[in-house]
Length: 329
Image (cartoon, rainbow, N blue to C red; front, side, top):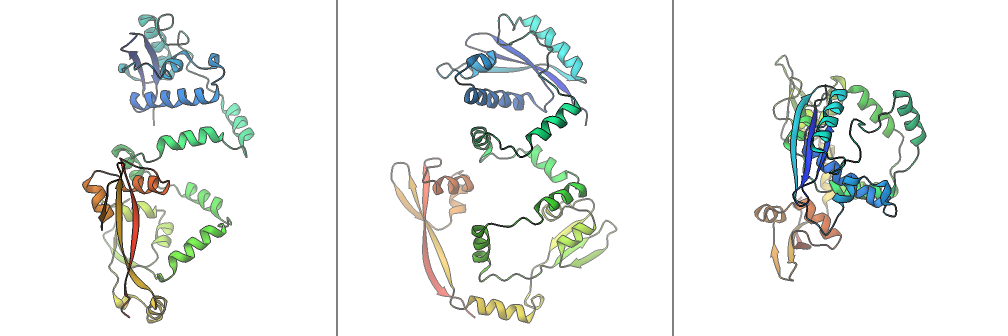
């Protein structure tokens, strides 16, 4: 895919000074977020040496001034990086943002772009090295709880399945052992829930309908992504997938006996939730998902912060379990 370059200007409405830059990213908004992230990381890494931080980043890090930044697109549809660098130099000169602005140079540098050989040597030297823990925590904090935009979801849904990448991922995971904690979690989850093959109805590109029980093997044989095939209601690569409801006849008699034995002594548990707001007020609800939707609260974020004993959107909750009646056998 050919990159389309853009020239942008970021202006402080307080000082009236500007920064000119170019980007090959999809939008200048994404580039603006990168600037903020890089400024924070530079401050984290070089906080004792301000000379190593770009002039523009020093201004971005000012806490006591609200610059009210304004972002403008100056030029679009530039096809080559060389042309983008020339246009960047032109606009820096036009707006005088080097001497009377936030640009650290007169433009045309475009950062440092290593050759293929240098990139290979850099990659080899980094193998086995761990990322700086400070940067790891900062990077994760920025994406934690973030929702994917519609165009990102669409891209992931329609991304072509690559058997080579899938094989590499499989080889990487093969032979890896789970730690005892993970094994115990899986074991406890499966207690009382014996699994058996699901029944799938697949419509082939030719229109023929087949019924299968091993969706994983089917996708592997036909070079398909199982996740995309199962989750895409509009079909994937000409294939349509439908999970058929299980009936008693679909489950072997031995499996039904095992399920019955494993449920003996278990009981249904109904849950209630005590919601606590930041002022200390409390009330009881039965359906946490419904309550979150009604109050425009993301349930996963509420759960995450509650586990850390923190409030999210001024709320946290406590789970109240009530023992119910035994299973009917």
